[in-house]
Image 1 (cartoon, rainbow, N blue to C red):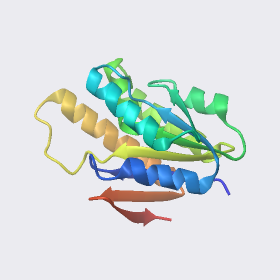
Image 2 (cartoon, rainbow, N blue to C red):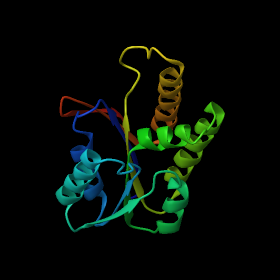
Image 3 (cartoon, rainbow, N blue to C red):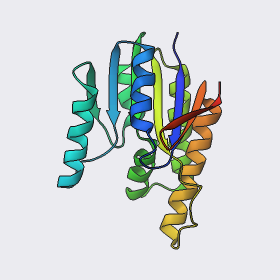
Image 4 (cartoon, helix red, strand yellow):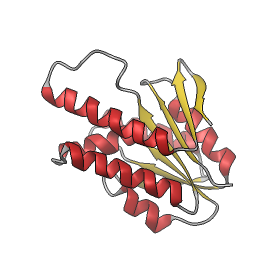
Length: 173
């Protein structure tokens, strides 16, 4: 049975391991869509560790911007997509000049496709609304856009989990 699962939580809360386990429980045809760009040595090492941990069962597609197009191109019955992560998808578009309404439109388009696609989708995102109010306009714009995108995903997803200190709390089923 196909599902759309949304996983959110703070940095280093256990989202990656939990999302990988959730995806593998949904099927064997696993596609990891990475929105992170390897822009420095530390990030390249981090990506290498993630790929190694996932193992040979995963196909990895690196796509920082054209996520919906990538999902559509690779969609088929029985396939399981893990999109890691929505936060970078939003910030990548923001840094390319997307407006607030444009970011919301992209989030809605992604959520609609995830709900209607042939396969299952697991999306990982950071919960950015529980910290301090950013001290600059760009930070506040990002926090607001990310919060809106998270709400869109959570409203559309079949299941939603919040990760804190390595513990998953199911908040929607």
